[in-house]
Amino acid sequence: MIHKFENSKIWQHWPKHHSELRDGIYRGKLFKKQKTSASQKAVSDTLNLLEAELGTTDVRLAHSHMSADEFFESIGRIRKQLFMDERHRQNVHDVILEMGFDPEEIAYEPFRLRVIQHLGHENPRAAAVYYPHRDTWYAHPQCLMVGWLPLHDLEEHETFEVYPDWWDLSVPNNSEIFDYSQWVLDGWQLKIGWQHKMSGVKANYPQATSKVEVGSRVGFKCDAASNIIFPGGHFHKTLEQATGKTRFSLDFRMVHLGDLAENLGAPNVDTRCKGNAVVDYLHPPHCSGISNE
Ligand SMILES: [Fe+2]
Image (cartoon, rainbow, N blue to C red; front, side, top):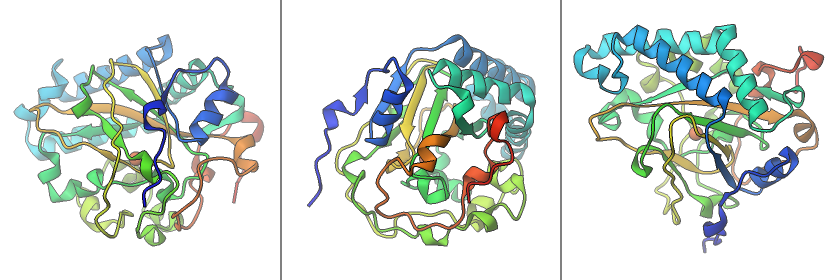
């Protein structure tokens, strides 16, 4: 028997205070607001990187005049810059601030560039991109908040969908295969995806172990540089694309350190992975070097 989520109320207005925002996220709500100056700058800096590396201003069609290997290698170089360069890390900080949080209370990961290609789901190397999953199956805590910024205006079929009926129901899954310390043994290349073309085939990505009747589907459309936050505990899935165009977005994981210490967040109904990804998040200066294990 599937527990019925308050589906019509899942998207909420962005509250004035971040304590309400966090509380809503921990109860399974999703939030979206229009672009801010920080999200606009983050998107524009990323588009500049893409345009320079892909050699075109029409980055959504760049794949059509490059070989698959050239495209993969270019994207890898961009991912590395987004993840490592101070300028882009500052952009994440500024986006978090304009989302209404106090960055002094938040640990976060740098931006990850998501690249969803036309018919990408037909590529066995990209199979894991389309697994329905919870982000918490990857050793993130139950209070995980995921920030998501589209680089373009996107229709509902171009984004992702959340399956709220499974918020507090156990999905049959193999998250026990995921061990964070093993995941990072190979270095950051595998984690962020700027090398290892075969990683999608070889790595152990947690997934549902039997066919799941997803129930209610909650999707969304959005304008470029909109600010979106969803709980990392939601069961969700990236949608397959057959539009002829690549979909680019940025996402970043964040946790409120006080809430983490208090064990707040989504109910843990089926997460059995090992380790703690938060140790490698960027921590505010007053608690740098903190290990939460
Ligand atoms: Fe995800």
